Length: 525
Ligand code: GDP
Image (tube, rainbow, N blue to C red):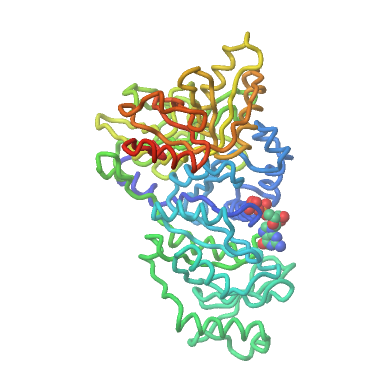
């Protein structure tokens, strides 16, 4: 492909993630989107995978047992001339670190909210990461077929709690059993809700944005309320502003029901109109890497081992930022300067894995990895060295001592621990004096997954002894005096041999600061 062709291909890409609190309806809406894309033919496919009946990616027994989605995958489909990449994000809060990193690889986000519950804690956290990146956020207020909160109340809460302006693109006419339809402000029509009917029925609005009174719906108090709310919003609400949508300062809000497939298509069509195609990425040398630059570049945002137990593979997920990915191409890994041939790659569809031949900026490819890659690595073709910004690290809060149960099986223990730590879900530390291993994670579930995988994938039975919550603070090696360490601030080394203290609690940290006022402690490296 030449530059123009790459440019045309990039312009078609829309790469996003769905963020939500568990149970808001992310899986259900993903499935509807896949149905529109013709990827799945039956509702229930994604759902079944989530509940564990679907054996395709059954690498995690835990996923089945707990009924939660631990892994995040990538789904690609074509719709109305666009190529859509949905990056799935694990909803469980223990896997938030994985989710945060996935959000580094998307160009926009869809926020799904349960209209009976409003903004929930996990939504808020994930929203803040998107906000920090300044990417556009589109909101879907779900479960309109159930009684929820007042729409005005939901929009107010969104603005107040998240600190973003909202522009309702449509408005519910009734709710729950009384749901009549949507007042589609953006397309100037009313969409009628028909529980059993296939397809939508539309009624046009007149020049004043109202329904003609020849329609009996105008007699309905739900319609009159919706019209009243619309008037209020037109006078006192935000105006539609595309630039503000693109900068992430205004979120278009859509109401609907993912389960009843009501309002989802309207949402998808508008989303595709306003969501951005992949843009330039700035690298660490402050240089702009344009997506149609003929040289290939990308970064690894996720590594996952053994997605398919029959193959025992490890896959590094690459977000392409420029150029064209060609199977078999040679790339340079910035961190080591090593040239690597990318001969074995895969792209993810909802139902099966396909071998990728060509992909451009915005696409995600999975590279079969034999231990070359780490999370945050940049790879590129050509002579010009590229290194993208480091991915943010999220400091672990929970710690355990870890050791091999059988001291004769140290080899598989070390191999397993090194590989799993490289995936980034758990962090490895060593006791400064004894060399004993300590693991740190954002949540308890990650330790359980680690223990399970060590046994199943590396045949290594591990014993873990909880250390509880700690506050990790790095210290400048120049300033370090080992005598500063005590039982309340354990001295350890991270994987890069950097020293840090694990403080028992905030009190211990304050006490330390009082005693050693000149020592600089940092939360993250
Ligand atoms: P996730 O945890 O965010 O992926 O949520 P799911 O998609 O699994 O949905 C959680 C529950 O809410 C499931 O029982 C869904 O059937 C239900 N649900 C999802 N969307 C809707 C909706 O629009 N209306 C109703 N009534 N239920 C819904």
